[in-house]
Image: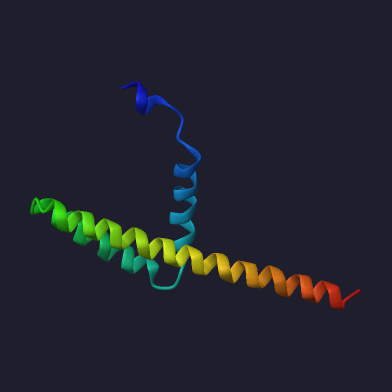
Length: 88
């Protein structure tokens, strides 16, 4: 299939980075395993509505954690700027 052979768009690469960075968040790895088990159960039971909702919930949690991580990083950058400004 030609469409599958095209390069991955930038959003795909950012999703890949997001997954790796959020897995380091406290408790996230265990939550992901539970999410994936629940999703697999929905597939096994041929329950597309539950599978869709579980996938959406998982993605929303990932998005929220990523936003929190970004906010923390921005606070750290701002603190570093303030520290550097005081040292001059």
